[in-house]
Image (cartoon, rainbow, N blue to C red; front, side):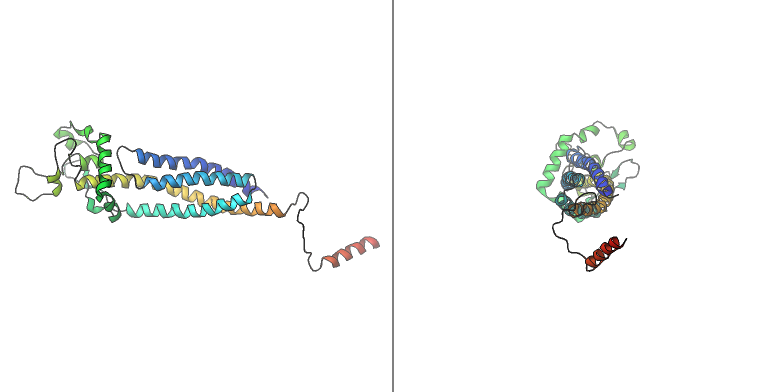
Length: 281
């Protein structure tokens, strides 16, 4: 049992080293997603994934080769990593807690309104430079081209993604036969041109935020699992660190290499008594 925690921490860090790959893959998937086109949540996720990869490698080396300073650095970084991952996960839940689509009567798809989402998310899509990047991404993904040839019957019977619902068509409530009627501002932003459509509509921004919300909730499950695993590994790592420190000053199976030892107060008395017993018997 003397080296049990070192062996366990070595195997667990090998496991987390492999487990960091899905986190990195999840961040890359969000970065390259043709349906989400957002880039402000996966960047911290990629950073955390790479840090877990490097830290797990350091912990594996420190535990298996009994390198005390490597384990000390490993535990310090691991503590910071747990705090960062916990804060990041909580932050993600907070900013994506609000939102969701509204059911449209007689339709399968839902429609989305930007006012339902958190102020932080709304501020992100309100930036002109940032929105231009998202708009270019949606155009390049050919998302709207997939419903370009839908018939009126298809609109009644088929579902749409949030981005398709918000960016590729005007709001269902729009009535273009009545010019004097007060309507949603998105009705006036709509344009039939393939490169315009409703890309400047608030509903399009809401569709993007809904995609962010859905993707983030999926990745949060992975974050929670990794957080629980890292806390368990950190606890075992503390034991491994104590074993490694003990190995530098305590050698129960060989020569004790300590150069200076201060005997206990009764050491000489017991030594004298032990020698006298051997002389008498």
